[in-house]
Image (cartoon, rainbow, N blue to C red; front, side, top):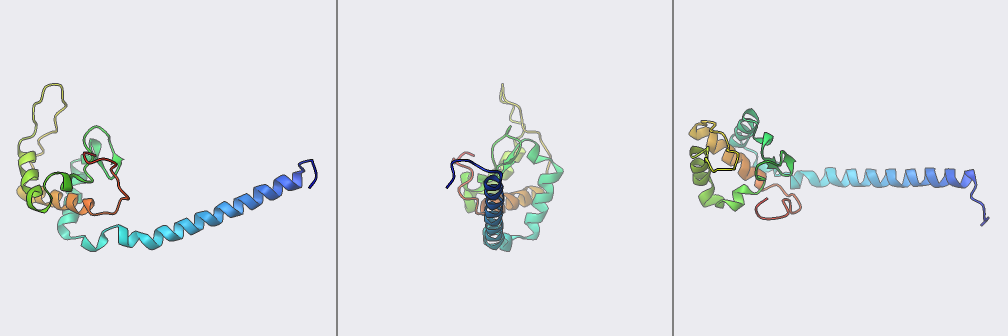
Length: 146
């Protein structure tokens, strides 16, 4: 090998590296597309979940909360709130009680508004959060409280 670095060598490294990393990108994209259906929890998607997502969007919950790491970081992460707050037995009663007692009026803390949601809307958003908690997120959020 010569002691000088020629333009041809630089060109070969550039194009060879570009092709190599493009092939890795394609392989990772293919892998993601193959595993996405089993990770996304789409089989458990119901009408209540869709209605809950609509309530989530209409009330701009993502303006304060994060869901699976996306959204504002002002209020708690809600990707695992179903598991944190009672699971199957206790989550819906928790959600109904929590939504009814808003705003809390704790000094020094910005209050969650009272959205005046119907019982059905609270049930639907609870179903949406339950569905979200069953998505395989590779361990996100990193701690129990989000």
